[in-house]
Amino acid sequence: MDAGGGPHDYYSNGDYWWPNPDTEEGLPYIQRDGQTNPDNFNGHRIIMRQMRTNVVFLTSAHVLTGQEEYADRAVTHLKEFFLDKETFMAPHLRYAQAILGICSERGAL
Image (cartoon, rainbow, N blue to C red; front, top):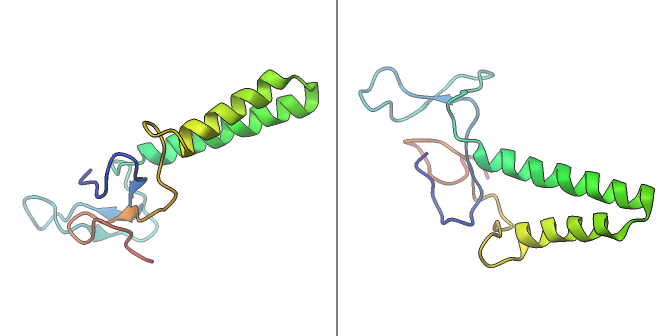
């Protein structure tokens, strides 16, 4: 993964970047436009999508039923994701789309 930043920073690899077949360690990565590398790290992307989906479903359930426990649980998800000192994710994408062997931060700002 070669992640930059710290444990609270969102990290992902650029989708279209692949190991270099001409070097032993595969670095620097090379671009294959339009071809997503299935081995790239995307765990944080999955976590962010899950949080979004949970909050949307819980909010919708609250709107449809009026039951406060749905709204309370949505608020808990948001607090854990954005505010809790132990579990928050920093509100930036500085390390999104990093390119191994080229840049540990966002490849295009």
